[in-house]
Amino acid sequence: MNRITPEVLRQAHAQCRGMPVYPDPNFPPSLYYRFFEGVARLAQPDFSVELGTCGGGASLHLAKGCPSSRVTSFDLTREPTVQIVERTFDNFRFIQMDVVEGAILFDNGSVGVLFVDTTHTYEQTIKEHAAWHPKMVSGGVIFFDDLGREGMWPALRKIGGEQIHFSDLGGDGGMVAILIP
Ligand SMILES: C[S@@+](CC[C@H](N)C(=O)[O-])C[C@H]1O[C@@H](n2cnc3c(N)ncnc32)[C@H](O)[C@@H]1O
Image (tube, rainbow, N blue to C red):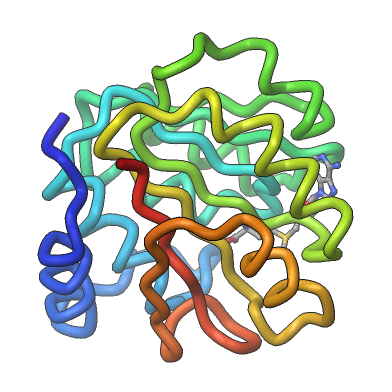
């Protein structure tokens, strides 16, 4: 895996608007999906993980951006479009499981890219970070989105670290990237 630096993130951010939208209307044309595709392509992580799959669009783009990486996505419920991602990208797997409990399935120091996208409450965000931060590899990155939700900024202040804010990505209030030293 290539170390994820502020420059890598800026490059992925600069490129994402010019990237083609995934040609399947089952998946929304979200800009942050293409940003993730670019991050995966530049960083070439061994493992990426998404907490909160919903339709699977974010994982689809992580899998597409780096076919040699393994992308795992957790959700309590399984949306029908998850099957499309499974059929199209053999480096993707879905696990129907609570995201905090799911951390036990990964070795410490193994995950390059983590996207945290479940309930966005203060308590849940702190629990998710505590469970998954040890799983991160040096040079990796954790993304949190929907920063406009009450509790997200207080949680991010408590988590600390080197944080880069992208106000135009990730829905309500933007997205933050926390770099793992
Ligand atoms: C905002 S949606 C995810 C959107 C998706 N990441 C994307 O970018 O397209 C949040 C998802 O988190 C799931 N979720 C909430 N709490 C969870 C938990 N404790 N464990 C697993 N999944 C959870 C919900 O079922 C829901 O599908």
